[in-house]
View 1 (tube, rainbow, N blue to C red):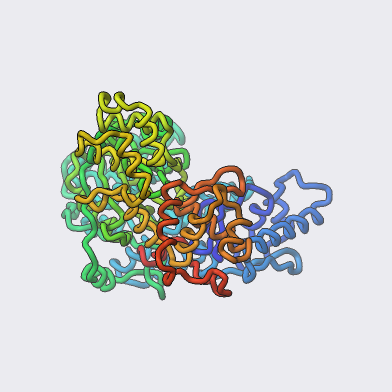
View 2: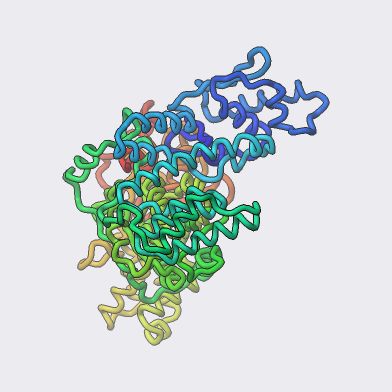
Amino acid sequence: MRFQLLGPLSITDGRDVVVLPPSKPTALLAALLIRPGSVVSTDHLRGVVWGEEQPTTAKAALQSCVLRLRRIFAKYGIEDQAVVAVAGGYRIQADTETLDLLHFRQLVDRAGTSGEEAELYTLRAALALWQGPLLANVPSDLLHRDEVPRLAEERLRVLERVCDIELEHGRSRETLVDLWEVTRVYPAHERFAEQLMLALYRTGRQTEALAEYRRIKEHLREELGVDPRAELQRLELAILRGDDLGAVDTGRAPVPFALRGAHPATGTPTVQEHAETAHHERPAPPATAPLPTVPGFTGRLDEVEALTTFLTGHRADVHAPSVPVTGAWGRSPVAVLSGAPGIGKTALALHVAHLVRGHYPGGCLLLPLTRPDGTPLTAGEALGALREASAGQPGAGPALLVLDDAVHPDQVRPLLAANARGAAIVTSRMGLAALVATHGGTVHRLGALEPGESHALLTAVVGRERIGAEPSAALLLASVCGHHPLALRIAAARLLTRPRLRLADCADWLRRDLPARLSLADDPRMSVPLTLDEALERLPPALAEAHLRLGSTPHDVLTTGRAAAVLGIAEETAEEVMERLLDAGLLEEGRPGAFWMHDLLRAHARRATALPPGRVPDPAHPAWREQIPPVGRTSPAALR
């Protein structure tokens, strides 16, 4: 288990992230982790937890708080990092493997002893460990007053050095994303303002460089009653004169972001490793593309309204390219659309992107994060595709990314960092809870369409006259398709290509062999069974088999007890299986503890389990639980 202090205080096992609730044990844990391995006095801990209004029985109350914290550790199976009572206080042991703060400091120390290129990679890796507002869920005035500014200063020193290296090597454009963000968060930080002015000037944006000087000059005078320091004043004068201020941006390929844990031994990728990765034989990443249209898009009115408001309502001036987009967490807006395969996530994302594209002068890009063969792009490949595509975008303002079919948060995080002034819509069959935990945003889990929405979709594609001629058959057809968007579009396409086919006959023909007949011969992508097969291939085999067995049962409502009985496993293991299938978009949740499966998924499961049984493992085998690794065959390390 690993503690994450550089953001909301959380616990992770490398797969799932648990953000601790604001509470006294959370404040106590933060105080101990800030000083790992050191004895933290009881007086200091009482001040952290209760502030100046300490209870009369403060000693006993602190002991009770420690006990609650130990119970939290036991709940999440944390055994190695115990809270130890020692003379005068308490202590918790941690190292670079169990605490991100120590890993960050290790990387920073290592960077100082390497060459500049390796130093840049290492420092980028260190910065990638910061995952949101520092200790946002820790209710302690003392920590936020004394410790948070000190920790934030450590990050700022690293970011300042990163920008220095980029500027020294003529990569001014690569610093702009970081500098725009940090100068708005820390408007009085003169060194960052100086770096931003220099980067803007070297990229031919003299007017914006001078506007940045005016901004910080006005801020310092209004807030502190002082003028900018001499270095800033000299830089303004040099820009006004048009002096040569060093290396102009060469426009060469940027250094890729170094990602957390990219090297299994050191945590730092080397230049040689990047070269080897580039020449590794694998299918080329799918190209980024202009936004395609979605003909006949209907329904999802609530989601469309919420998303358009979210993507346009966070900006004071949405047409000003120099103003960063920021959401409620102080980050770029991120919208996650999750749900079952073929449920219409991409269509909704593209439809909304078209509606809001006028608010993003930097353009809109569609970036598939999974290849046609189902293998995911690594974060480096995705980042390279984004940078290549961004070079041809219409402007330098905020851009909107549509990141399609993500399989893990580690694919998405570096893309959000590279597009820090813009926004993103992320589609995924997974819930991406860890991404939401670290970056905030809005989440929409899509289900089947409402009957009225299904009818509107058929009308939009097939035509009002034909649907109106058989209104009852149209309702039946939508029901046979399970109000599933992909199934409805396939059925509608079949009707369009066979103008004499009655809707009633089409519905009757389809339901006699579901979902096998919901496919189009001329395009394998338009196939419900193949889409569901591909979704199961992404899962670990034991988890895929569990889905098929559960789907082939006669139970309309699945509970943990029923799942345990069907699979022949303990209820604890069955609960884990249900949660993972839910996260993979293959189950839906009703009332607490009750799950259900879409009719098409159940039909697919029944058809699959009716095949010869040689491929189905015995779920009663004692090692069955060990056969279920985290959802998705791709580990986070493989995505880096």
